[in-house]
Length: 232
Image (tube, rainbow, N blue to C red):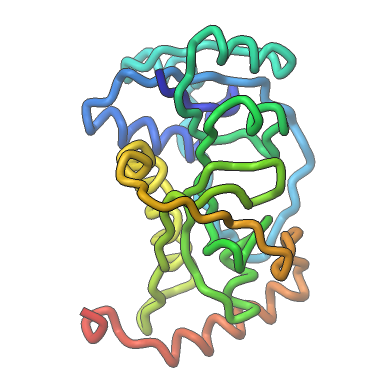
C-alpha cells in the first residue's frame, strides 16, 4: 500500500492532491494524519503559496472522496506505517520529516525548487533573486534537507506577460501534478542520481528587505523573457 502523510487540519496542498487523485480514480491510498501544531508564521510582503480556501476537516474530506484515513501521534508513526506495509510514503504536509521516516520508508517529497540549486524555504523567491533555475523536483528524501535520490524535475517557464503570482501558481500546479504522478515516475526510473551537493546551502525565510529586491529582479527577468505565444 502507498500512503500520503499530512497534517490533521485543512491543508490546501493535501486537498488539491486528493482532488487530483480522486479525479483519476485513485482511492487505494491511505491518508495518514499527524497532529497539527500551531506556530507563529512569518508574514511575507509577497505571498507565493495559495491560501487554504476550504475549512473541511481532513477526515471529512477523505470520507467524502473515498480515501481511507487514520490519525497517528508522531511517536507512533513508524509502527503504524510498518503495520500498513507501506511501499511508498508521499509527503503532502509534514514540515521537516523525522530521520527515522527517511531511514525506514521510501519517502517521496516534491520540492518547489530546482534541486540542488535551490534548497530550503521560499525556493521560488530565492531562485528569482539569485538568478537560479526555477522549477520543481520530486525525490526520495534522505536525512539531509532537500537531498536524497532524484525522481523527476522540471523547469517552470517565465513569460513576459506573467505576474509574480501567475508564475507562483504555475509552479504550485506543477508541484501537485508531479506529486500525483510520482508512482508512475518511480516505475519508469532507470538511473539513480544523488542530489547531495555541498555547494548550495538550504535557504531560510526571505526577509522583507530582500523580498523587495527579489521583486525588482522578477520584473527584470520578466521583461527579458519571451511571451507565451513566442515560446510555443
